[in-house]
Image (cartoon, rainbow, N blue to C red; front, side):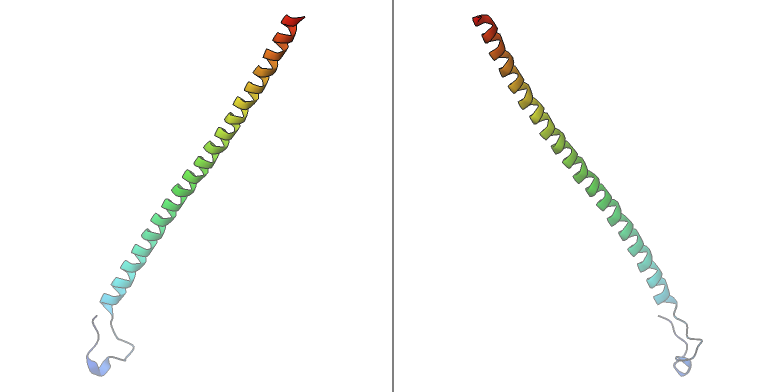
Length: 85
């Protein structure tokens, strides 16, 4: 950090070059980190939503398979009744 000579250090002309640069660098890093965090968060959310959709579809698929088995059993019963008549 650069400052004016000690006798004018508190004057309005105090120069602080290095710390301003560091602050700007920190802001850039913070913004970049924030953007990266948000990007990862969106990706995580997308993955979680996709997994939930797949699980829901699998649940529907299992229900349909179960319904098919029930209908097949009904059909077999009807065929047996028809043959016995």
